[in-house]
Length: 371
Ligand code: CP3
Image: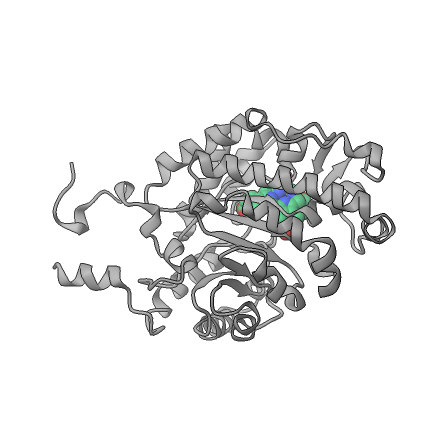
């Protein structure tokens, strides 16, 4: 039963749309700077390694109970302001029939790379029923998470193309670029198909109850701004547009994208993710006043002594004040050897140390007034 006293309301009944995370995405006042970590689910958590023992990655992604539990683990441990679905950017590719596996310590490996017009036919549109296990997991998570938002995600067309064309992880993306420059016709068809699959995967997650989405273009920093505009931006924009009418904030992230922050901000998302190479005040100038920013602590900083970590966290918070909205995060994913206790301390510092950001919250002001 609901009580009139806001302090006794079951947190499960709170609407995620009122959360600090969603408010920051919308550039609204927040009670504290919200924080979550890319790749927080899995990686460094011992409870994750235990529950995953003996289960291949893609198989784990297809078991809703396991996905639900792994997604909740970092929320319990770190008190982060958002959950991110445990899945992978290649899950929808496997669902449309691409023969691939995720090799531990390596990443996605594709049996038959895509390099010709004939290969394109292997990339069929995504049938939502083919990822019914994702819908089931998202629905279960919505019930468990209460007021904590769940972030759904997809890989952006360029990053997915890199895995498909190279056949696996690549440092220089040479075959990908050979196709892009050498056969723009096939390239654009490939990216259009991938935008359809990525957009479809985002729709499935939002329709099942995800409160926000992130488009990961992890490797697009390999391109110049001019090539990004010609060969990638329209397709990333199409993937983001697939959920434009759903009313959920969209985050657009890449690594090494300092030169691309302006064009990435133009692709349509409400929030631009920034890696650690560009201070957030400079990133804010590049992304413009109509975009919130997410980032950007160097994930390697957590290996330094706590005093140094705290200083770096404070610097990110200070630079973030220049942004129209700030979601604290790492500049890329949690590194595998990260000490979970350091991440927990970072969350605590962001929550307490960010009280003086000059953005008093309407929510906390009204709560104070009612007591
Ligand atoms: O953020 C989260 O915690 C949610 C889960 C998530 C995973 N992958 C789980 C995963 C997310 C958001 C991803 C996205 C992803 N996958 C990206 C974009 C984000 C980024 O880091 O740039 C990319 C490029 C991939 C492709 C991929 N899948 C890589 C590079 C790897 C790592 C390979 C390795 O072992 O080092 C994977 C596998 C993967 N995805 C793991 C997890 C937890 C590790 C697999 C395992 O635990 O066995």
